[in-house]
Image (tube, rainbow over all chains, first blue to last red; front, side, top):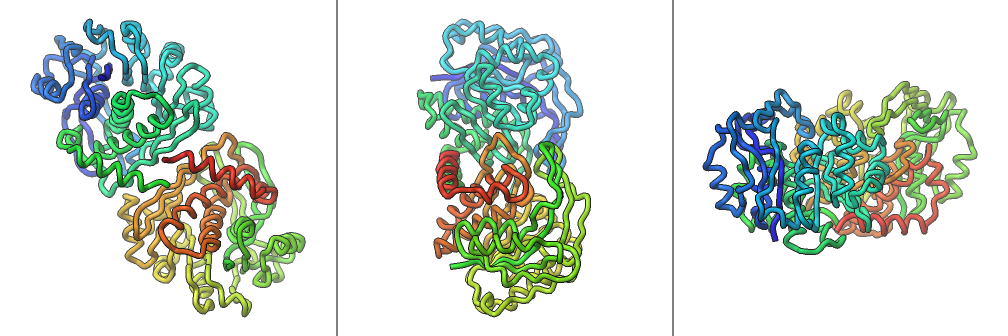
Length: 298
Length: 298
């Protein structure tokens, strides 16, 4: 099987209490593709500027990521600048330079239209819908979003949520979107909009899944050294979606295992800047941490 | 078996976004005794003023709580006044009237000195040590504490931690006590002080146990209606300690099950003001929620 992902490909300049990186490779779809490619084939849709290194696209190809859907246009690549204090749960944005991403118009290459598993990373819900309309018969569609779209394109966002199977969302943003402080009630409200499964991301406190058949909780793996949380949410989604894509089943038990795989993958990406840790990650390390993770709960 | 608990017996005046209560029964040792008495016999040590209702002491006795260790002296009972905003994780203290608690001098009745399981609820570490010195041969001792003692009696607190088996502590207070931002490292630091097991309380995000044999995580049970979080930590500790006391074993597996029982009991107490929910709690409800809880994780 394979996964179609659409979203940002960017440069990130990040400061944490433990160091800093300048214009490192980043962007939601990039993090997602890097991680999911450890498990399955990936079709990547996004846009980069003239300044984007061709070697990275080639490197993605070498990992089994199809980059036919990555448009390269004149202008500069999307650039995000931010920092984290000791509370690594919340990124502070210093600057967002949309650049070529500002006029992004996602068009799927012909083979992508047959995609069965789709991840709509955090972009304008209008574009998310536009991508979805081009996919002929998807079996499983997930989307991620953020407060910016909740505030500026609320109705459009709700229209996309009605069309997807899974909504990934930060806890505070879920509360904002649902206009409901209690997480359980807020998730139920979102389920009535259409998305049957709501995955609430809680940063260092893990993630909570509200599924038709029940509720499931995956803690964040307790780490001694957290370096840079950038991309943790997208890496979580990648582990989650890739596990399901590999399993080829959509039952509750598979979704639970997918939550564990999401949490395991997120625990790696935060151990270094950008996706440097994912780059050098061995299959045996994933297996080992997955076993350790399972001992964390009953 | 039975548990000896020493700590505050108080009146709480609490405001939450969902209502308010005036001078309701509270205090750490009171919450603990109410909850633990559902599982085992309890010996209670504390102090109350002339204004404290005799009926409550009688009621505790009817639940199998030995109140011989509760001193009644002239003056008023300890009174705590606080409120919670929508972020129910953090209590805001409006007023603390120590009253008779200010000159509390815990003396154990003769039979209490044989106690095997001891819970030192959040009081002055000097008093915690004083209680411990009166117990002849305890098998399992746990203590809870708070930022006030971390700041004002740091050396004394560390001396008690050296003498106990289990430290219950809020995550932010653990970081403060260990002077270390990372929770894993902070817990390890505390283990080197003496307490072999560190239980990190994370409010609505559950609790994390660092045990010699491994790490374990218990989520908070996701609830639609959270009414008043007062006493949740002590109720958690009561479920935890009572489970171990009942099992009579001190292995890692028993400690894991104790974490689940702690989380289950805490999930009840927050459903109403004071310990009203614990008062009307049925054994069958505990069993049911424990089963539901286990489905939350793998």
